[in-house]
Length: 382
Ligand code: ADP
Image (cartoon, rainbow, N blue to C red; front, top):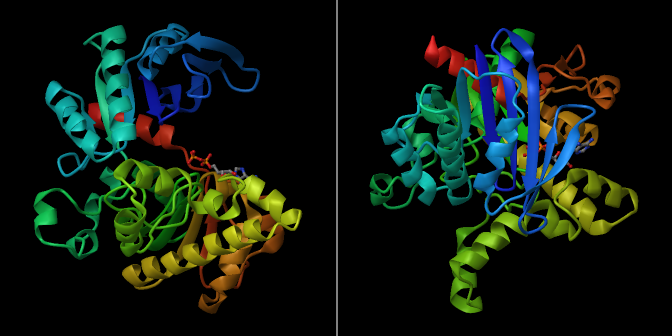
């Protein structure tokens, strides 16, 4: 079965073609837009990629040129859809009713669901009705979280309005937890997905029982440009005394906070590390806060699990930043977590980097959301 996986963000789209029996992609394309009005950069292929500039009126226009370069036919299209809300708690074949549901949840995740819906409609238009399309929701893995962990302690009416914890990065947490189970015994696992966005999942026997992101992907950890959790009283203060409106708060908390807001340099961890190397104090503070908040939240996840067998690092920072893993494991050394520093420094892919005497396994796992989406498509169709 040949599966086309579409994984889009607010300023990029990744498309890969997979054969379900084969892990390596048969073909891949990556398109980015937003830097120059009316233009998008399309890269086809892996290492020696071909690049092309596309003229676009809206992000909707990128899919046709991407699909024009597809080698051969497609049997199914798998879409990463960020928000499945209350209605979609598992991978679902796309029908007109499902599209309506995804449209409804645009209110909860405006940047994502709207673009994902456009990609679904474009794929339908280009490939026709004969090719089934499947939605794999980033919220679905967290459907197993128990009620006390997903209800917010606001008014009870919030529940009726769908205001509750959903959790995100579910496709990644699902993939890495399955990979972890192949690598080490880990009935009680804390998965740390640390990319530009960042979240933790407390996973017991392969099922999510708690997570740090909530109603939106803004809650929880400090991130690249997102604040993560802050006192909501700050927002009331800004509205009441500084004249802030929704759009300004949105920009402030989603784009001007986190590593970028504190360092004043960038939301990119590589640039933070470089600035620390130059002795810049605000970059140091940003890194130390990142570690502090990460450890605090890991503590919360471990309390939900009632103990810890394995701590897992994944995504851009989790997989590639040895100083971060060292700092976290040092802070948590009271649990008798011990790193093999030489292994940690080498940043191996899919490895246990704990020292032999460690009471907790420390795993580095390369996340592969697209492969997980492809597997979900096969599972639903067969
Ligand atoms: P996204 O959430 O957009 O998928 P990624 O998972 O690619 O993001 O993660 C991006 C983050 O990973 C950035 O902060 C980047 O600096 C960080 N990163 C990538 N490589 C390294 C590295 N070698 N050392 C430290 N951080 C890294």
